[in-house]
Image (cartoon, rainbow, N blue to C red; front, side, top):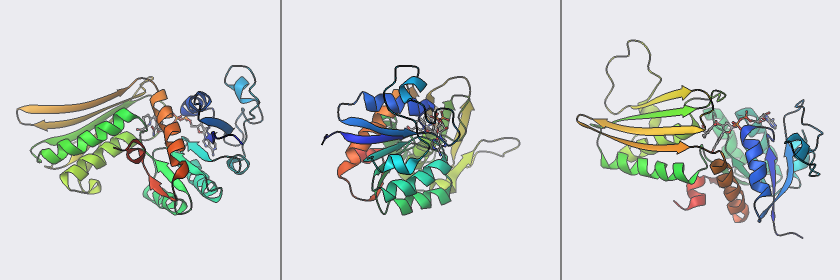
Length: 269
Ligand SMILES: NC(=O)c1ccc[n+]([C@@H]2O[C@H](COP(=O)([O-])OP(=O)(O)OC[C@H]3O[C@@H](n4cnc5c(N)ncnc54)[C@H](O)[C@@H]3O)[C@@H](O)[C@H]2O)c1
Ligand SMILES: O=C(O)C1=N[C@H](C(=O)O)CCC1
């Protein structure tokens, strides 16, 4: 039996799905167990290699996650919240590691993920890149070192197809800034100001989302005081940074018990 980890990719035709497939095929410690797309998608029943514009590779795109998960040790999921919730239940039944990159979950969705994580490991992060996870740590440290004379604003830019705002990364950074300050993000979050908003409230953390063109992902955490400003910035120029992180997480999760983990755990940060 091969000692490579069998990984399934759901949402195969997506911007991230295609990156993830290449990252698994390029990894010496992983093998592609199968791929899925949503029912009715025109890739269903076709050879994956041909769908991606190359030669056949003998992997047929499925719309049956149950059948694919049964032969997988890990599932990598960058799809949409409703799909990911359904996948979490099936991954838990299959006792497979579920790596979740999907963003835009509602609080009730997160409760369902926590329930699934009682049966198998879930590794979830709004951003799987090493750079952003380091930036998150730095954000917490800087917020801890400064008082609320420094106003915190988080500005993110993404491509025009992105459907959720603020980005998962912006929320990670906001949570880190709030933790550094010793407050709860929900109590201080101020999203997308418009109209006569009144003066900025001391201690608030502001969020702003720019959408346009093909921007892969850019995040600034601004600490603005009277007379000086600190800006922590991450610029993503290639989605491969997210895909590589997700495959690393799938391999890392193999000897872990049920529970909820994130990329900080994977990277040891
Ligand atoms: N955490 C990270 O590092 C990171 C990085 C990039 C993107 N993302 C997130 O990943 C998600 C996907 O982003 P994208 O740009 O690839 O989007 P996309 O729209 O290009 O791809 C999503 C794919 O999922 C498929 N899908 C939807 N429902 C499905 C189902 N039930 N079964 C199988 N496939 C299904 C869609 O058909 C589509 O092909 C978003 O939530 C995005 O914010 C996270
Ligand atoms: O392209 C996207 O969508 C991205 N989503 C994640 C987020 O919401 O932060 C990570 C960056 C790219």
